[in-house]
Amino acid sequence: MNLTQQYADEAAVGVAFAEKPENLQDFLEPGCAAAIWNRRVDSSLQAWLDNLDPKQLPSGRLVLPVEAVPSALTELCNLADTPNGVGRQALIDDVATLANIFANLLGSKYLRLRLDVASETTCPKFHIDAVTARLICTYRGPGTQYGIAPNGGEPAQVFTVPTSAPIILHGSQSPQPPTSGLLHRSPPIEGSGQTRFVVVLDPFWDMGPRPSTLEVH
Image (cartoon, rainbow, N blue to C red):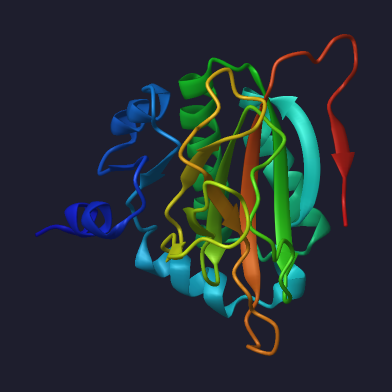
């Protein structure tokens, strides 16, 4: 049994698993609440990320055209003093690849991009985001947790997305909001000494006359 079949057999109803990015099209099918691309980044990139000083991990929030993602990530890395080298470029290339896949899937020319670095739990309660759709990829630390809770509250069974495996979720503003009751949260990491590095993407359709915005934190 391959890993995708194992995860699919153990996962919540309404969650699709993809071995290849093109299989993420299942996310658009009726009844699909989320899709997970079951992949791992290159082991050398993962080791570089895991050993990097958390202060040197890039963070920020931007709204920008999809094609501007690589240059924006380069700027954020410069601001964080992220070391130049193969690891940094591999990270930029990987996030840019996810941005293109996600934008093409949703038909969006613009994205809201967020890079978070956290040593404590940021969203401890299970919830559904007030967006049309969202991609979350945890590059360092434990991945996003999710489960089914038709009436809200705590799911009876909680699943954890593997590190570096992107999950795409429908939000409450989706044209086809999920009815399965799938909720998600950040995993609890207080007191663990772990640092999570998470990239979040939302589709953004109306830039209007405004330039892209950058918020660094």
